[in-house]
Image (cartoon, rainbow, N blue to C red; front, side, top):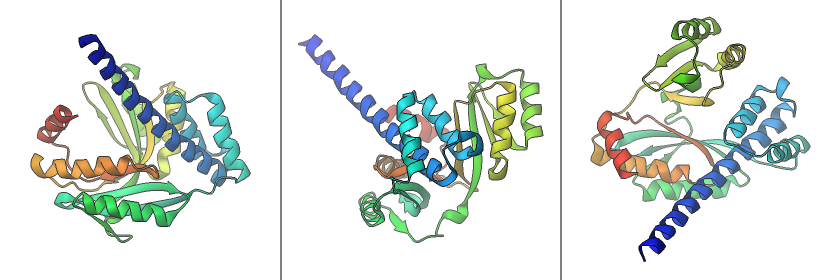
Length: 250
């Protein structure tokens, strides 16, 4: 029976991985579709679409799936609406949600329920967005970088606001307006980021003990799992204590 139990565990883990991969593909397809609809099907003249395609390739999305998503966006057959929702998680943590939906009434009702059940509250527009700034964020494994000095120099010249090089990874942050310039500089250096995004970065963070933080993180995970949600941003400070507890609980 031990072998059967192990096989059952493997199947469950594979099912979870497949489900997460499917959800990721759904989000990426929606982003590609909307990007093509808004800016046209040619990534050379549509930076948002170029980024969406790059992220899809990093996730190993098949080429034909990417092409179908572009075609749908270009033809206008998909009618997703981009919406930003704001709210508070337990402990007063500010939450900003990017969503794409074909039914805003359904989405807002379901998100309100998730907030309520999770001990938080869906808020009105502008309630927490002032606590975030739109930034370009690029992450790289250190082994992909050229010499640290050359990398820093190139990023500064391209307009990076901040460059952090840690033990295993580097993070470059730029103004929203300089995102394309950073992309071009990376292409010249022939460096492929692990992830590149236009993110909402908190201007300040809130610190909570683990007992309170885990309630906020539980709600954030539930919001991230919602079918219409593309990204969830928050201003909870991920302290070493919280990171250790969170890793152990995952």
